[in-house]
Length: 298
Image (cartoon, rainbow, N blue to C red):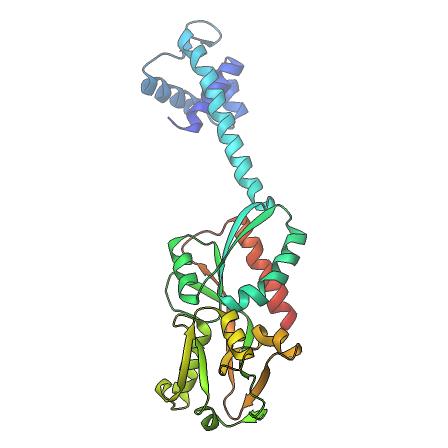
């Protein structure tokens, strides 16, 4: 049973004629007759009484007519609803983000997005970059924002900005411009493994031929806030996102230093699963971020 057979049946019942039904649905009369015969064979009943001048529904045909009309109505409703989805941006959007973009980029993005799409609500998951990727791959997040690319053929990345990593301290004796060798005497506070900031810093050390073991690592912490607080109390120095420490620097709670010949800049990326179709709200968010951050910076 298919919709062409059902539409043919409904129109023959409506016009009480195979030829008029064929004209109404732009088919030949033999095709309409074949659809009805196939339908009757499948249902194992006669749907029409063809003995008189007009084609009339049998009792079985009358019973089936109501079901046939409902089937067509349900099909049309489904098509209309699916077509409307592109214009109806609503529902809950699950966003997974690594710490820095989650705290210092995402709030302004959500504010402007909400102005355009007020029917969308959010579930924000702040995680390490590795955990963000796992959430995207498992389908437990719709879209992610990360500070490092972790390659997987199921993922697509688009760069939405840059983030500079800087040295911070609250040591008044450290000069504003400092050689890296001088820092080997300082106690370092690092983010834990899995953090994009930590990974990018380690890769930069490798490029400069410096082993992580040469650093005097005092603490490894999972929280960015804990890093900033430890530095504020002059427990040690750290490498963090410039975005993440701006407020602390402006308030005079910590200091920013320029490490001579040791500039570290990383990208900030939107990441999505390229094997899944984005929901309308996810697609709208994706396009909004690209428009707000990429186009405004170009």
